[in-house]
Amino acid sequence: MKLHWGNYIAIFFACFVLFILFLVYKTFSINTELVTEDYYAREIAYQQKIDKLSNAQTMHAAVKIMQTADSIQFVFPEQYANSNVSGTIRLYRPSDISKDLELPISLSNRKQNYSKSLLSKGSYVVHVDWKGNATPFYTEEKIYIK
Image 1 (tube, rainbow, N blue to C red):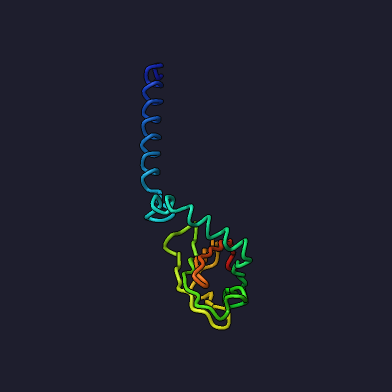
Image 2 (cartoon, rainbow, N blue to C red):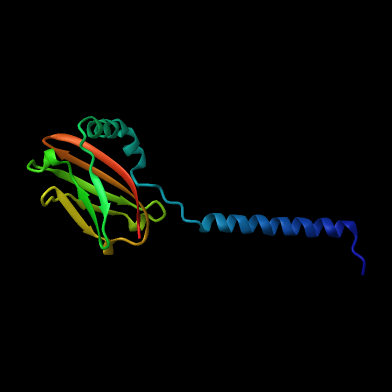
């Protein structure tokens, strides 16, 4: 049996429709997460973040983030060792929001340690938002957990 040219057109359009349906299925099956649920509110408050970053740079108050074999160590500036330091450390995992971790700051001799067992291997962005001597500071750094 020989196919007519009209049959080829019908086969082409049927394949095209199946391809489009496959693309629609794949589009709905992909997980699309926002960075945070309150993304727009955070963007409005972005100037405050810029001010905190500026405070950290001008006062040389950036937090040093170091990795040891089994922990992550946050070392705060020496001038804030005896002051009342408060704030949060947020470990943001860009590839999976369910692996984000937010921890309160509680210093011991200018340092704070967190076990790597709380984290899975991979890339994280560390956001340290803290206050020392009533001055707000912010530090952001990318790390890779091995």
